[in-house]
Image 1 (tube, rainbow, N blue to C red):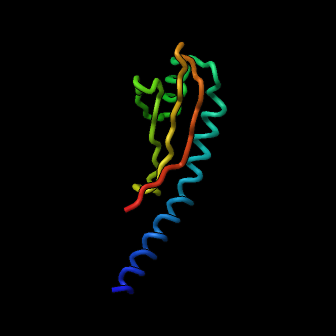
Image 2: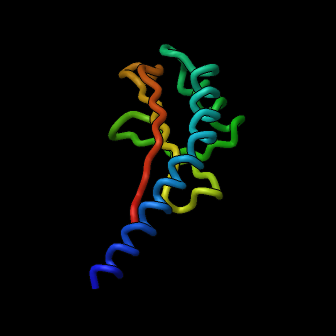
Length: 106
């Protein structure tokens, strides 16, 4: 029984570690794009323009007053992704852009 559990844990570790490596290029691509094209003070229209031109699907969360997206890389499915949050202030202008790597487990 211990051997089976050990083998399963080893397989999970290999799968998860492989996902971390494979999502890095997509993370750098998305972060670089948004860092280069969006800045604090940009309008809601500019945010939508940038996301659409980059073919990043998004939703707008009216309760959090932010645009959000999960960007996936087919090589990393379904365990890793890039999360994007573009926060707006009360006047509808960009206040913060967050790009992070996210992971799930089995």
